[in-house]
Amino acid sequence: MDERNLLIKNIIKYLKDVYDGEKIEGLSQSFFISNKELDKILREYYIFFKNEKELFSYVRFNYDLIKGLSFLDDGKNYKYYKDLSIENTVSYSKEQHNSYSHRIHSHLIETFEVKLGLKKKKERKHITIKIKRIGDLLKQLNLKLDFLREDCTEKDFIAVLTGTSEKEIHLNISNRDFYYLLTKIKEYFFNFSITAVAKTNKIYSKTGKLLGEKNLRNSKVDFPSLKNEIDKILINFQK
Image 1 (cartoon, rainbow, N blue to C red):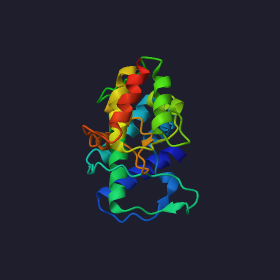
Image 2 (image 1 turned 180 degrees about the vertical axis):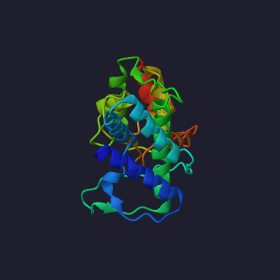
Image 3 (image 1 turned 90 degrees about the horizontal axis):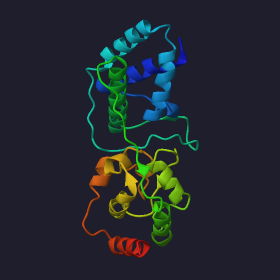
Image 4 (image 1 turned 135 degrees about the vertical axis):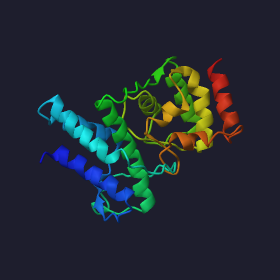
């Protein structure tokens, strides 16, 4: 059996086991993949079939297997990463398996529905640079606030926002301060929104937690601790 076909079958079996409340034994770290990695697997999976008719038949079969499943969205963004310092086999809690299943299941359902013609593919509008001085502004902000961890630069940050880099961005400031900073740099970009920033899936909080849309929106406050410093930097920059 083709490797991609086997992997899709294993993912579907896993989803059904989680949904049915089966005990999930330890699994290889490589089993837990990102949506982007899943998309790559699916592209190779689709090429495997002899013709469109056979492809449609298999996709429909797999879609019917999972369309009746559902998983609670608890709003938590668990990190399923590959850590070479530990054994290859990992064990996660019931909540972690549910969270992972929710993400993978939602993505598979959407992808299969697009392939079957049941749903049009959503065209995501990427963030793009509107004012080139944003690079200089972020450099000033990072120089004075140190809002990025030392292994991340303002160029890395822009590249992640605009979808041209796979690098992870780690923050050195609180989520509240970061949310406020985002509202202040918005005017320097096209298609910029909290949702678009969250959908990069590459930005991590000071504590190492992936920042999703819910995390970011819950960080909104009127007066974060660095508000005055951020405002001062922006005023001086715009002179």
